[in-house]
Image (tube, rainbow, N blue to C red; front, side):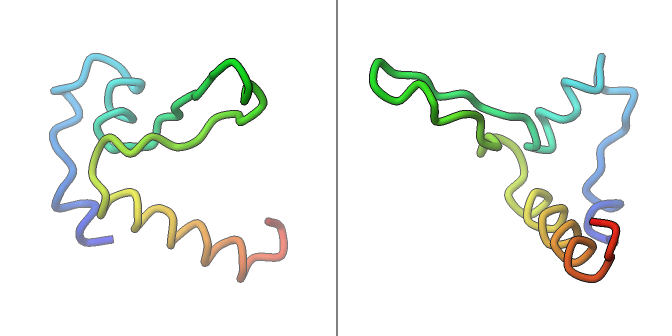
Length: 69
């Protein structure tokens, strides 16, 4: 949690939530080709790898420890 707070830039530097999500690296990317149109969306690899990892691990803990998820 400390890393997230320390690495978080000033929110006023971004024009929209979409722009901030892209900076953090939690936006989706779509891959389409002629034969694999059903691959769907995946999280993009653009942005902070460490930030993404912390968010993923936090979500995984909530999923495994909280019966509502």
